[in-house]
Length: 146
Image (cartoon, rainbow, N blue to C red; front, side, top):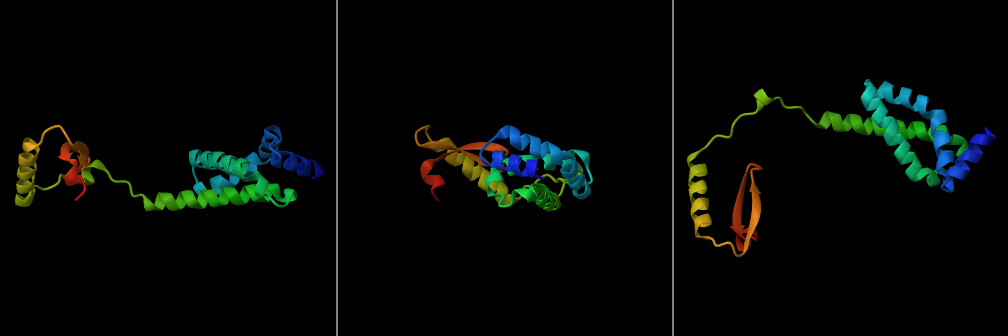
């Protein structure tokens, strides 16, 4: 136990090799914990990597060196829970679920008006604007401020 405390103190002073030795001693346990939460090998490996990064970045905040492994497990659990929340927020959409946007009379009128405005513009004072992430239009800077 005292060798772990010495390594933690060295790591807190910036010794990368000491941190590497410490992390390698706990890596298998971190992976198992991450796998329990993520239920997927690749996601669990991502959590192990994220845990290593966060722990290395914040090693100086560890108050009690004897609890290094507990601290790592806590980081891994928090990272796993955060990843699961992110995955729940995103809903995969398949191509057949996407519908083409409908063209209404208003859309056609706006498109015609925009085309007329663009035809009247010169290249001075124009900026690029992305509309609907599909078409690129040139609009005067004054129009962009509206």
